[in-house]
View (cartoon, one colour):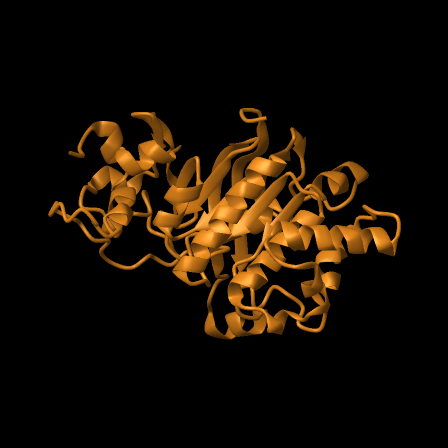
Length: 333
C-alpha cells in the first residue's frame, strides 16, 4: 500500500479576518486585521505512512489539519485526495464519498465527546450517518466490536463519557473515528492532554491499528519525542509555513534549518553528553503582522540582509527539503 500519494496539499493558504466591525474601523481609522494562519503549505502523504506536522503553538499546524478535512474552507491552494480536488467543494457525490474516508481524532478527550450521549451512540453515529449498516442490531454489534478493538469492553457502551478516564475517553474517540471505516485519519495532538504512561498506550494502539487496518495518519504534535516514536516523515512549521521536511531519521539525526535545530535542543539529553545547546530565543511574531523575508529571521543567529528581505522557498538539501538562505549558501556549521 505504501508509496502512492493519498493526500496532496499544494500552496495551501488559510487566512482569518479578525477585524473590528466596520464602524469601529471607521472611527479609529484602522484597517483590516488578517491572521495569516497558513501561508503557502505544500506536502504529500503516501498511503500507509504517518506524516507529522510539528511546531510551536500557533504555527498553523492544526489549521492545516482542519482545512484538509473540510472544517475550514481554504483561502487559496489545492487539496487532492486520491487525485481528486476536494478543497472548497461542499457539493458533489464524489467529494462527499471521499470525505467519508477521512476521520479526525481531536486533542481534548473531555471536550470532543457529547456528555449527554451514551458511548454506544457516540461510536455508532458515523455508522448511522453514513448508512454503513442496515439495522440497529448490526450497528450495536459493530460498536461492541470497535470498543473491544480499542481496549474497552462492550458493556462500556452503556456508560457516559464522564465515567471514563482521559485515556479511556481517547480510546472512545479512536473507536468513533474507526466507525466511519476511514483510510485517512487526522490526529490533532491526540496525546497532549494525557499522562505520559497513557500517551504510550494510546500511541501503541494507534500503531497497531495502522498495521491491522492499513491506515494513513496525519499526526499533529508539538511533542518531538512522540513524533519520533510514531512518524515516518516530519514537516516542521513556523508561522504558517513549512521550514523543513524530511524523513524522521534524517530530521532528528541531522537537522538543517536553525529553527529545527533549536527545537531539537529542547529535548532532554539522557546520555548526559554535555554538548552545547542553543535554546529557542525570543517570541513567535504575530501572524497578523509577520516579519518581512524569512519569518524566523528575528530569532535566527544566522540571519543576514537577504534573510530580512527575501522569503526562502523549500529546496532540496542533504536528503531534506529546507527553506533557509543560510543552508542554501552554506553559512551553517
